[in-house]
Image 1: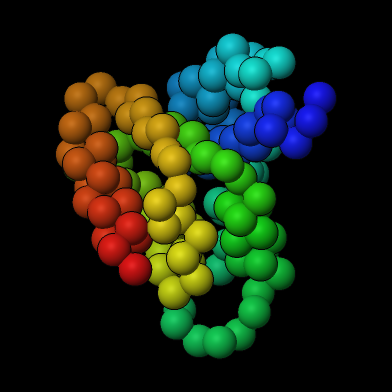
Image 2 (image 1 turned 180 degrees about the vertical axis):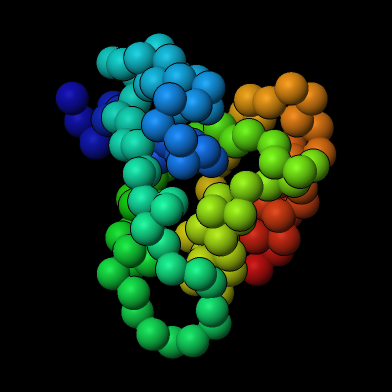
Length: 134
């Protein structure tokens, strides 16, 4: 296999912190479906990221998050909808990329696994539009 034939690297992110959530099950299913077609890395650090601040302090988990995003050829996110919006932990993670730009023009697949889910989906799309405007 030469460099042009390599499998794409996909970073998979569940917006739910609950281990047995339907979002995690969707991510697990997608990962299984991509076996042999992509290298999938599951990001498990949403609950470990500090609350976003715009200081220049380099937090270890933020550095890990950004590095995984830089290494990914694409991103798969599966998110629930909480109180008509995006889970705070997922939004916090996305906020950490505003100044560093890892998500700018990064191919993205977004699944909203929720009853309804249209408001969280719309909010996430709006966030990604802002992140691609850098």
